[in-house]
Image 1: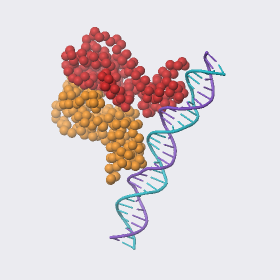
Image 2: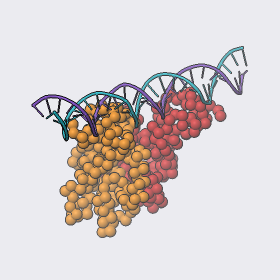
Image 3: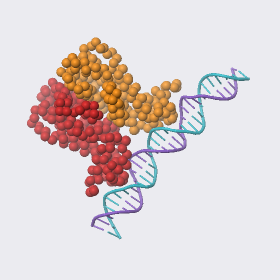
Image 4: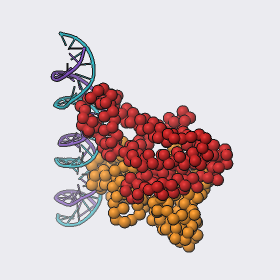
Length: 194
Length: 194
DNA sequence: AACTGCGGACTGAATATTCACTCCGCACAT
DNA sequence: ATGTGCGGAGTGAATATTCAGTCCGCAGTT
């Protein structure tokens, strides 16, 4: 196994185990075992357990953005752009329960709160999903297609239902078919459109 | 301090500390100290730490339902009933960040997952907020006022934004005034109305 | 080609710490 | 005296992190 492979193995193992058992339910010993690595090896690649968790979060967020942006065209109509981003987001998280579970746990923890505060101070987007979605919101408000509401409220109206729905699907309470996905996105649009 | 007072003090201390530091960030010793109680006293009133957490959850959920139902009138129009329940829910959680934080942590943990599964099996509502809200959804669909969607999707469209918005407000990212509250509820209604 | 010495990635048992929970004796009431 | 509720030092298990050594591959020598 070459050098970066171990790093990857550790991150993959940690992500998988944390998604299932939570941060405090997965000891570093368990991560090392799952990654086929000595307990000490983790600390060759990461300062400590927290750093490992941050690294996983950063990677997942990057991948999520890439997925949302792939096939995206600035030239489309506003609603097309909105639907594309929402569709990508929803489908990607639906088919990757592990990623979703990890991210949810991350945001609903002291880690997430710290991140949120940092992002607010540094002036960036206030949450992880996407900057391009915010562009769409701003453009929509300017063009009069989206109601003139605080950006954060628009964001909540658009993303909130998605997160809820994904949880229900992953919990096995409902099956996600094409109809459901489309209905959800339409509902979100109706919540924010003029 | 009379007998039930200690129990109350323990629950109050635990709720407060857990809301701030998370389940695993609040040792029982810390709870005991905050409650002005010996470390062993906790175990006179609760089998173990988990039982304590369950008890707090049960109490908070009961209080939440009571708040939503107070002043509620079955005779109102559909939209009135919807708005009342949503308004109560939103305002109550907005003014009690501790309760909200505790509940969020509870639902996003193995505790919450277990509860969710139990509730599904026992046929009750799939989440904590309210049964009466579900009655409104069902009636709305029957009357043709709410879109004919799976109940869980309606629920996601209605509650998802509220949870998101409350987080933003508690994080200090936005201020919750009358306008914001009303706009949020209107947005949720637009997402589900026919 | 065979041997030797060496650097550093890797290991995992040992360590130090933290935590949930127990238990024994005290203080106060009867 | 006897009983009851309580405190808090103590216990053992679990955990993150460390560190003393192992092992592998390569560069230099013969």
